[in-house]
Length: 192
Image 1 (cartoon, rainbow, N blue to C red):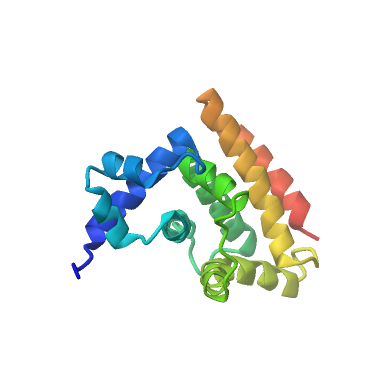
Image 2 (spheres, one colour):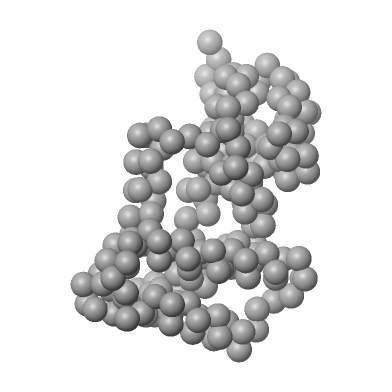
């Protein structure tokens, strides 16, 4: 059995993302993916037993990638509101910089490929824990509304996702004034 090369796996995942953005998740074919990645079809199957395994791995890969820069510029000493503001801006910037991630995530969650395994839930929980912990901290300090942290994060992310789509489709940048308004609405929605 051949050993797997991490760089080649990433090459295949990046090619899958490009292809899914062009033809959709339903239109993804392993032979087309091999052509897009400039590898043999058999090579794709060395890394991924089938389309389901590929899509699951792509989801985990993009989730980790998209969460990577979320904490950039956040200092431990920052007040809670500043931490949330920076995190929200990082989230928006990441979505604007990589609209293909949003396209994939939207298709993934509406597809039969969604993986609800205990392992996947544990991985997602680990990645989301710092965000939820920040919300819970704010609730303990009576700064943030007493509501399910997951609900509050979902509402904030939903608003930022839609703004990112608008910015992407119009080719506009978010002005400082628009960002102030956006964060003000977000903050008003989650604060006590």
